[in-house]
Length: 246
Image (cartoon, rainbow, N blue to C red; front, side):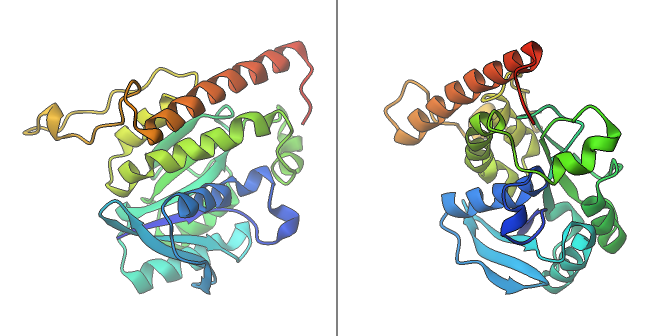
């Protein structure tokens, strides 16, 4: 079993904040794979279901960001989930908007939610870093993360959340490299080539839908890829010209 944790603050006031992009990612995954209804448990909201052959519990702590570790620690102990099978989805100031990275352990870069989790369950869990960009000044960070995404952000954010949900089966399998490779296809980055495991041929790897095939999921993914790439280009252009607003 995997535990996917989304970070954010509870309540309608914070729902569309940049700081709540972790909640948004889990909501999209739950919708995509038909997870059960959200219910209160572990000082948060959980939803349970399967992604492919893997059982996954989704957790949105309701302890507010700074105390996220209380909920994660309780869920981890009750479900007996090892650190390596915990993935925390969170906003990342040090990544450009639309970029996604996965890492295990490491520093918390001033993120209070991560700091709280590390204090409760140690540090070697997986972090799914969802780039929101930096406001440019350290003094502006709190205002920036606790305010809603700008209109220009909303052009790329929904397609990116769709891409995260599309690639979630690889994350559930523990194939972080393939997850990132699929995400990279819908950003301006070149896809990363996942390392090939010894003793397995390329034919043993899960295959993505062929773009030229008639499969509806492949067609939808292709459209999202084009839309996100185009919207990111527009966003970057507007930033350069000074037209974008926070």
